[in-house]
Length: 79
Image 1 (cartoon, rainbow, N blue to C red):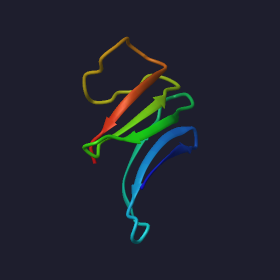
Image 2 (cartoon, one colour):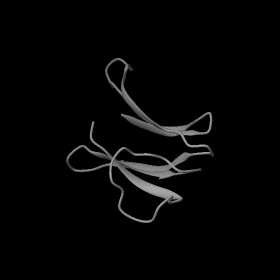
Image 3 (cartoon, rainbow, N blue to C red):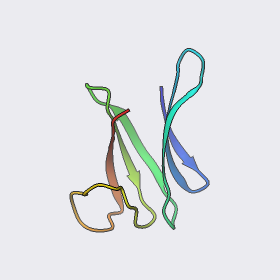
Image 4 (cartoon, rainbow, N blue to C red):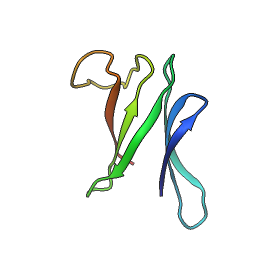
């Protein structure tokens, strides 16, 4: 299962093993402001799509489509 939420003002997306509860992976989005995950879903290929509200600028390490410093983004996470 995939769990989304906020931890200490940062957006958090994590996956856990259903058989033993061990964390498989996590993605944390931390800016200078308060960040949160609005919603998330799993696509037909198993990729995770999460709507993340940003409290400041964030370097995704990849080119981004759209305006600079957006208030929200849709992240695609390939586990």
